[in-house]
Image (tube, rainbow, N blue to C red; front, side, top):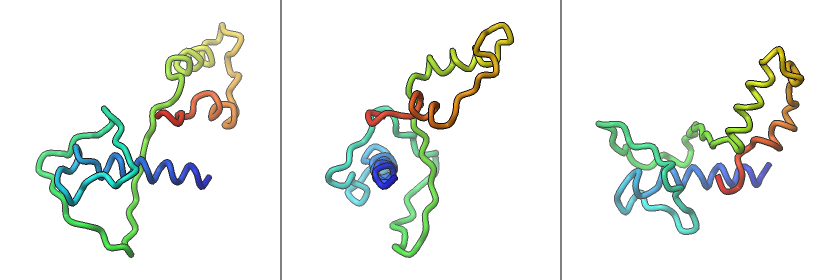
Length: 107
């Protein structure tokens, strides 16, 4: 679980504080972090940095990673809901789903 938290923190810094997202020396990517090409969402028009958050301030954020085997998952979903398919109604456990479709380290 600690490793997952480190990955999420790394993604936060690489996406939110990346150079393409917030240009300028105050928002440079920290050493050891990398940006994910094609994964930076543009800043909305009219938005501007407000400055650094207080170290006592809690920041809530959500990060969504692409699922692994997206095409296979879509095919499985169609089969699970097709009454003529032998897999109809045979749902996956959370563990099996996570093993088959969770984002990889490369994501």
